[in-house]
Image (tube, rainbow, N blue to C red; front, side, top):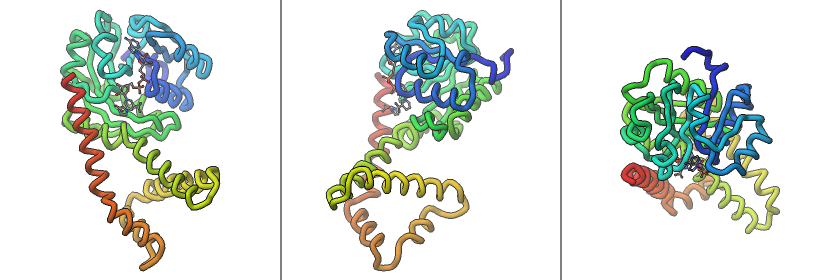
Length: 273
Ligand SMILES: NC(=O)C1=CN([C@@H]2O[C@H](COP(=O)(O)OP(=O)(O)OC[C@H]3O[C@@H](n4cnc5c(N)ncnc54)[C@H](O)[C@@H]3O)[C@@H](O)[C@H]2O)C=CC1
Ligand SMILES: O=C(O)[C@@H]1CCC=N1
């Protein structure tokens, strides 16, 4: 890479939820929006993101490959083959797929072996620089490509490399998809509070702040086991014990395991499609 990562142009093919989240995070972190270029088939989402962030936009995917040092492949897995067909990647340093399921072998085939491929699995909290991303480097990836991926995903949160591509489906279950599980759990807690007679806004404020507080407490003290934090809250024969007993009786551990297994299974199905 001839330019520093701060000065490099980051491209996105596909202007959906995930591309928007990473671009918002990069701009929030200080990456020059004029050094971000994004393409999409249609112009509506592009124009909105240009208005919001000041990034460069195009409806021609080749423009992204022409301008960007690093290109994030951010269309749905089923759309990837069509989106990449015929593109010239020879001036791109590396391409980073964010697609669930799609194996490196297919990405290499879709890009006609022109560019080093990294697989990533980020999540939408990247918008708030709180993302969690798993990364996998294919054989042709060099150290400078890894640093480029770390620049992008380090800017918008935390990342971890896995050295077994098979684990990327588990990353999808635990990072890419998991914000939705927590959102769903928050929704159900708020609904339960409303059923008890609390107004929606108050229930939302209490639940969201408790979720943030719980995550912050765990994150800021990695030496203290999560189970220990749980025990600190759980007075013998108290209210928390009553709630946790109920969750266990409802099969919370079985539910979580089944959810992770279902996401992993779907990731593997997507790799076949
Ligand atoms: N939404 C999420 O939380 C996460 C999504 N992902 C992955 O990110 C990828 C995109 O997902 P979303 O952003 O949710 O989808 P999305 O549907 O919001 O965005 C995809 C965008 O790609 C555009 N597109 C489709 N074909 C195109 C083509 N040929 N050329 C240019 N643009 C094209 C679509 O018009 C759409 O705007 C998927 O592969 C998904 O697996 C990964 C992690 C989390
Ligand atoms: O639901 C999906 O397939 C994508 C991948 C992870 C989050 N969203």
